[in-house]
Image 1: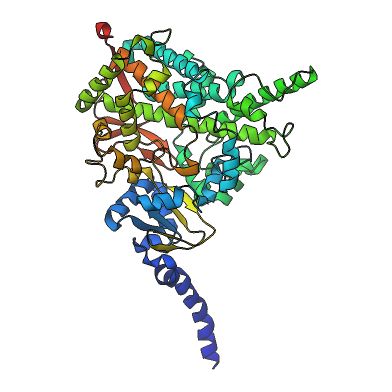
Image 2 (image 1 turned 90 degrees about the vertical axis):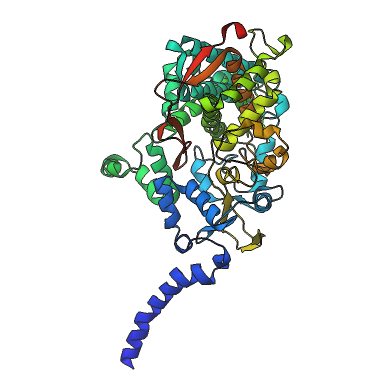
Length: 529
């Protein structure tokens, strides 16, 4: 009997582990019906390994190609690729909110539009800003004047480049940086990177360190350990330094300090106004910072505190640099490929055909006229389809059980989709890996638009959509009225690469990739213009 008791004591934990580690995920879980490889269903670390390799998005895409529109990618994680799932997860009235993954984007210890889980909190904050980001606001002063002036300065920068060869990953980042800082902070934080300010250009360097991908991995998969490592001080800080995924200062440190200083400068100005007896409830400018000031807790019951306003602006700052500049880079690089010469010529004919009334005082296309260029919009949409600046899986979760695409999804299971896979559906996009702006002008455009997801959808759709489009249409129209572009000598068989979370994205049809580099030659059109 004693031996039986010993056997029972030994077997009990073994049987428990077998049930917990094998039977539950593979057979007893409600997700056991969902197709997918067993290794991914058994442990979250299988997908974490793909994150570590920087292959998550492409791996999930290949799994969809093998298993279909619904794939289990973790013990409690499912990826979808259908319009029905898109509506259920991200559409109006969805029960799904953002997961804890997004809390890594909190700034100054405060949540913002990008990190709120609750649709109610997100909606309340978005109401404060939606008019400022509306298309009607973007296509009138002072927004149009701002974008057109930055486009003019970009042209001056290209004109000054030796041989008119520009490393456009950097120069386009200067363009988007100067736009977003003026839009957000006005005179309190507007940068001058296009005009050569080295401190302002150095802000871009804050996001270029490749170890930022390693830091993202540790923050997501070993969050408690990562927080502990970076919070050590004095002797322990020295001891743990070799273990840091990214050496201090970590990603975005410089940008966040710059953003906080801009807010402090504004706050100091408001305090001075109050001391001098001038009303501070309404700031004089139209920047996002000044608009949010009207909702500060000194003016509204339950209003925003200082760090909430600073966090909101800093989040928009971080979101508004890479997205616009990376898209413009891939647009120019794609049009500069010899195989795409016909597309560039079509675009040039369109922008050269703009009337005199469509030009501003400098003889450059206005933002409003650029917005109406049909072929230009097709070029931008095709660029976003193939090279979306955020092509990765967008995780969501619900506190209630749901049904998606016929599968029972328990509460708190992570679900999501990615633009990368949506935009490469061969049943919707013919030759999906081929750059072809003409596809958006054909009879299939309506169906393709339903699958187009570069700016997300529903209540969480990118609030900066219209600002980004104004920046892209205005600069592209301005460039191709004056220049034709070709790949610079030595860069012919190279694809540029961009960083998005854990991964580097590029055009995998090319034999070589250079991250954060793209060399383009600008050739003046002369008499044609």
